[in-house]
Image 1: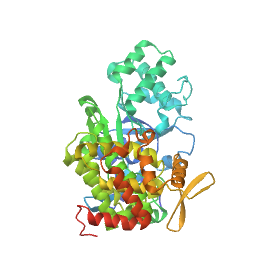
Image 2 (image 1 turned 45 degrees about the vertical axis):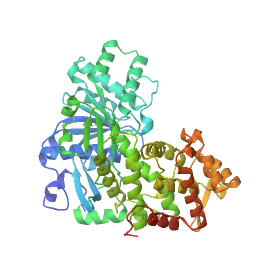
Image 3 (image 1 turned 60 degrees about the vertical axis):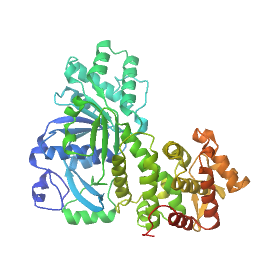
Image 4 (image 1 turned 120 degrees about the vertical axis):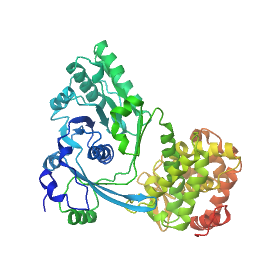
Length: 511
């Protein structure tokens, strides 16, 4: 079977199982420099740029820069930088299955082996955009000379590139770039810009360049959200080869949902005009609401549900969402309690719409997201994702949220360790031990050894070093958490969940 490349594209155009790029997109100019070759970039920005190119809008391709030493570029070379994106998900309750050959990538360069070629891209008058995803630790200040070939850090590489561009165009103000980092840290654009400026001063670069750097280039805060698991599982790969008629070593799978929120004005919109045909891209002066929606509705729901679902016997998110009881809990927790407690003002219809998209994502049959994995760093996640929502809910509603209370009680139960082995505390459920991967595991181990459930709830909720507030003072919250915890200990997690749903205000006809 042939490998995906330019040569076989004409033979694929009649295959209705795949979207094949037209010849015109393969000759488009290079408009984007991208630091990173990972699956998130290939499954989100590159995918969206490719979609715009197909519709005759952006009309630009991407030069990818591989920053790390690991791996090689042979597969990209052999496949003319083409790769298949297998989109699999659920939208409005309907299964989505699409296969797209992405042709957005023009070249892939190694920073270590092709640094001069990377710098030569700075001379390209068509270049407009820099995109990056170098992991969360990539946006850090490393005090280094940018004259190394190449500099070690991502900011060092980027500053060297921008300096080369400044020199190539004699500091022309219209030759600055729009820089969009996608690293998952708050205010990633602001952080990157601050590091670039500090590094420029450390390298004693001329004031005229620093002025150009600050005023002619735009580092945009951005938030990305799309699950891109990467290489399809072996069984799916075999099916794809038979269905599509070629081999693809670079094929990746992604969910159908995507969000790319970018902080910018009309000038940024004009440069990033691929947003016009990609409705999941938002370019606005303030993107805080997108971060709040994701943090509270998606991440917060995960955190308040993971211990409960795991202790109730569900291994994966999709498995739990097939169960009427747990699915009803998740829906009400998210759409009623969390939605009404988000500590950010926005229209309720927007919150509900986002929540329904999250529910579709949770039900995606192609993703195997394990509840146990979500319990990693359980305590810090509970504080960051849910405590502000809890406090705001009680402030507005003047009552305790019972679904949050049950989720919190399940968190306390999950943190009950029964043994310490190989420097890891373990709990026990369903006939097997599980690892408690939380720095506070020893704290909870000692609490469970020395206190009754009621005492434990009071101590944990009043621990202001955890939560920044005394949660035991919230109206009825401690009482509800205690009651649920005792009930789970005396019966079971699943029985407690069923009983709570049957006595709550939720319509339980599906139970």
